Image 1 (cartoon, rainbow over the protein chains, first blue to last red):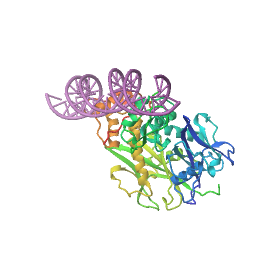
Image 2 (cartoon, rainbow over the protein chains, first blue to last red; image 1 turned 120 degrees about the horizontal axis):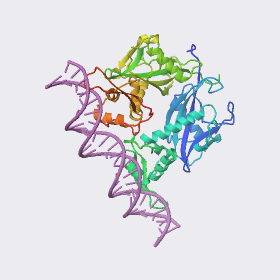
Image 3 (tube, protein in one colour; image 1 turned 90 degrees about the vertical axis):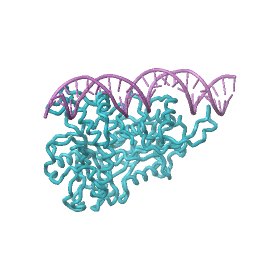
Image 4 (cartoon, rainbow over the protein chains, first blue to last red; image 1 turned 30 degrees about the vertical axis):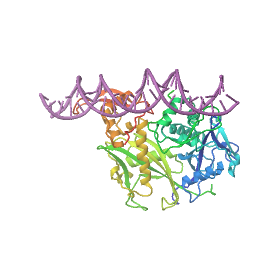
Length: 228
Length: 228
DNA sequence: AAAATAGTGTCTATAAGACATTATCCA
DNA sequence: TGGATAATGTCTTATAGACACTATTTT
């Protein structure tokens, strides 16, 4: 083992949520060099005896202040270009997290410096290290996954309406979808959503049926983005 | 940097090809401990000043003896469970390579011990380390990517027929596809393949038109696997 | 001529796009 | 009652599945 070059291994998180009809990314302002006072992805070093998914989940709870696991967390990719971190040879395993809009805003130890930033506000070169690239990859992954998985519900609370789910698609894709065709597609695709049997109360207009995430892991057939 | 636990970082390759109507995986028999004499994925340590894609490409050429880059190489995922390698904390970045059936069989320095093994011959627990899991993930990735990308042509020589391309799909998916509907789909999807203008010669039956890989990076609409 | 393989055409079933209508709440 | 939102229905178009037929080569 001592014959081989030592690396530091970190995890970095692309944490996305939908709030106020805009896609938001969780960023932290770096308090220490390098890239001090610049925005960066939340993350940190992997512990000696820690598996990679555990490290990602740990950082996610630390940065969001959420005790229980909600939403969705998956590995995005690994970035290790020499020179990407001036401190030395650091390889980072990036993860993509999709979370509902949290009623409890971020609060916790590391979360004090964390902020939700609309992805439209992020400009190239603004982020520390190679985090621009990682964010771009994460956004494309999220957009693509909505096509052939039921993961849009990861952006929703446990019980949600078809209109809420449609808002997720429209926000993440930046497109408008026909409410009637969307309703037919969602309720007609096996396992996409499961009806709760109750409806919303106290809202404007006709009450909407509530649904939970269904058992399907893939959508058959997929819901494809409208072509440009 | 010295405050943080040191890791070794390796790359491992899931190299697939289609030969004799069967999907084959490139495996090496380990010549050194640990797991000596067991089958394992080709791979090795990342060099100090080497980017991860470069390390993967280097290992690929070393193990296959191919000088020029052919086929397709993409990052598959990163595996770092503590204890996955008895030598210490080793994180491996796994890559998926799709290659045409090479007229020159594997030959080269490290390639002497490399062999093409039909994936149906691989039994659980047969491979070293956690390579069973990596192979399973690689196979699923390859099968899924054929649905919505034109990557099946990465298994073919530069010029190929529709029947050859269909054989790739049938072999990777383990299904039979209707030749006429497949022909319509391939030639009708924009950018999937580009006609060369020549045909095969000296084969049995009517000569087949030759095609090259088209400019598309995604298939619209995708070619979905037949449901079970 | 027969066998083999390539390519085209036709009909049907399924799903998506466009859009009208009805249903049920709150103010 | 009117405004707002949810849900259903209809028509058209695009695509996939099933399958018949024609075309061009080798033997």
